[in-house]
Length: 358
Image (cartoon, rainbow, N blue to C red):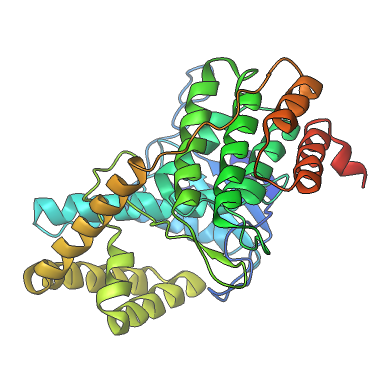
């Protein structure tokens, strides 16, 4: 079924600017600033049939015709049941285990790409572990901007600071305990989401407890990326696996994939998928010992993190900010008092939105 080019605009459902959170340094070599969305459905909202379902060839012709109308700065997004959209089945390898792994890889990459497209009110720190980052964001979903900012200030200032100056290790760990009290203060007004938020914050606090400070007060943290949300602990991100055990193949794969993205070339994209699948088959046949070692390494790391105790060092009064601050200061025995007062004052100002006026 052919659609007259003059009718395309009736299927356009929205245009929006893109505020990039991913690839801020343009490492992939391309930049888009606008997304245009088209939706082609066989029926309208009232259930009336408006068009037939398109064949693969008709879909490709339609998509290419629309894309050619826009410049290189535009991403055109297509959806709707009238389109015969290319799916994972086009790249089936004949190996069920590899097919599942490849499907997960595509899903994870798409999730990262879609996350990068989301407009962001403010750039907050991304927790390197995928599952923990997702749990934190879910716990903060629907919360006010002040609460979200306050939560990330705990992570930046108390859990995972990169520079602690002349602070002792005991003070650093007590600072993490302070951060958990501040997290509890936030959680008390979060309703049913409070428990999920606290669970994520405690995990991040455990990452902090396992940090290592050098003689200059610089702290490094071993936070592994881990599997995607919903995947088992022994699931590996295969592109990360390739990068680690076969860097040259990774560079070649990324070169093909990047060129395909820049040129919007389906043939090159197919080449990158074939290269990827062939490499995975080879790796699981030849590099199985290394793969098993990496799987065991992550499981051991996660177990160590979960067994790390974050001591509760304060019995804080969560009634209001004044009572909370006073109870913390009264019980403090380790953290420098002027530093503690400044830390708590800034936390309170963030919650009240005063930091935006500075």
